[in-house]
Length: 132
Image (tube, rainbow, N blue to C red):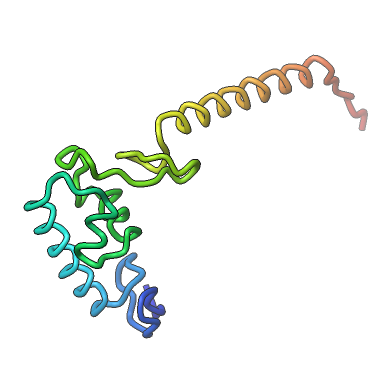
């Protein structure tokens, strides 16, 4: 891949995969993950903020692991994180159910508008034949 600066520590490293952190920070992140995992085994009903406070791990890193599938929210019923749109708690994906529905409705409306707009143009379109 080439050289890159580590997102965490800023050091220059040889980026061989799509990782955005250096191997040293990656190892530290793995150790941190095991700390979080062990805490969750003992405290299944912890919220994401209680987990963050107890393990001193950033909420954003915990959310990253949830999205990667490394931490399962189905095993931990209180482990919800904020929706990226409205901030309401969700346990899967980036958006809560109401925001997903709103976005889906907006996409469907945009799709319908594009279809109608295309149909309007095709009715009014005409072509000239060039005589050469």
